[in-house]
Amino acid sequence: MSRRLIGPAVAGLLIALSAGSLTAQTMRKVEYRAALDGRGNLRIWNMSGSIRVTGWDKDSVAVSGAVPADQRFGCGGGAAGVKCAVDLAARYDGIEPGSTLMFMVPRRIQLWVKSSSADILVNNFEGDLEAYSVSGRIRVEGRVQTLAVETMAGAVDVPASSVTLRAKTAGGPISITGDVEDAQVRSVTGNIAISHSRVQRGSFESISGNTIWRGTVLPGAGLEFGSHSGTIELRLSPATGGDIAVSTFAGSVKSEFGPATFVRARDLKGRELQVALPGTTDARITIRNFKGSTLLLKQ
Image (cartoon, rainbow, N blue to C red; front, side):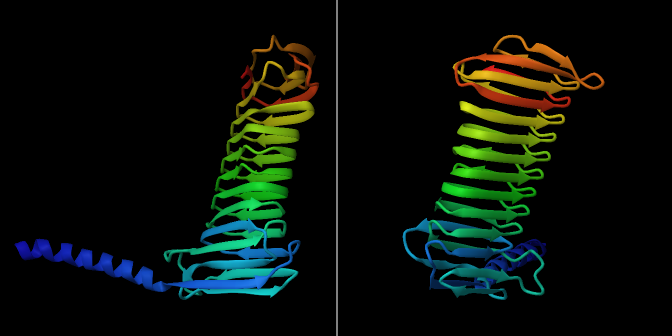
């Protein structure tokens, strides 16, 4: 009886240990170094695992990490531009561990990164960046010039400041905490959160996700918020000045800045309301919410 009980347990343990050993054996280290102009460009492909890019003050790119032994890793190009990619094995079934790649790059280059499930982290960066993933998380830190990030199911986290920001997800949440001159942020079902940010011009829209603004409204700022059924919540300083125009079909509007004044009837049962803000910043805020709630709250 004891043999029947112990045998399967021991066998399972041996299988687990063998699998762990096999996983460790299938990974191999990779390294690459090359000259790269401070205004050059770098393109990175890594479908699974993780990608970490850090800016530095050298005219070169340095790559280190680990990839599965049966997958090919390679970089090529010249000082004006470099491409690095991991090619999946023909028999890849998604079970093997992904590649872990770390890049040190000139901080002001043009950078393009693409993955399927790999997480993407870019920090200490001041150039132009485009980052795409299907389900991986994207996080960007630094003082970026132009920034475009897109993922289907992954989260987008942008503490970086930027001149322009374009962020898009299908279901992943979007968090923005950096200052932006011009922002366009879109999601289908993901929530959007803007906290501690200063945005001069911005458009934020989630079809069914919630949008929460806790940023600073700059003088003369132009901000637009849109949703079909999600809640749009703006938490504003009492010192904020200007007008808020709210268009809704069947949604409710709550304001802590005084009652929303009826302006005009819209098509069918829609209506347009206006809320006057008491401060002196002279901002223009537009909200279009088909049937979700709109909350205008004091910080």
